[in-house]
Length: 77
Image 1 (cartoon, rainbow, N blue to C red):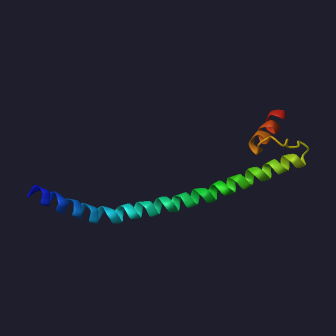
Image 2 (image 1 turned 180 degrees about the vertical axis):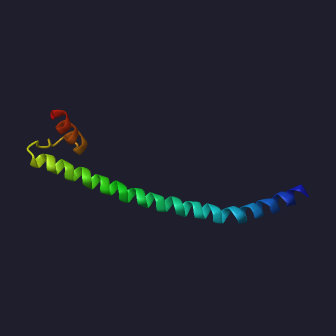
Image 3 (image 1 turned 30 degrees about the vertical axis):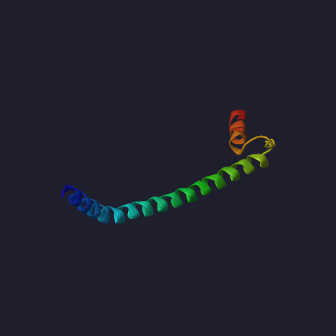
């Protein structure tokens, strides 16, 4: 008898929780999409900043990352 009650409780719980879990997963996916767009904008801005620094005369070395190039420019000033 307790086994049947356990199965019934499990079925009821899973019927209630499944739509909630699907909803949470959908919200997480939407948030990840927003963060990837924001990350792309930040990356574009950093690249543009590095190009502006190169136009001012501080050339980027081949082995140097964009952030270290900007950091070198800031330290030079």
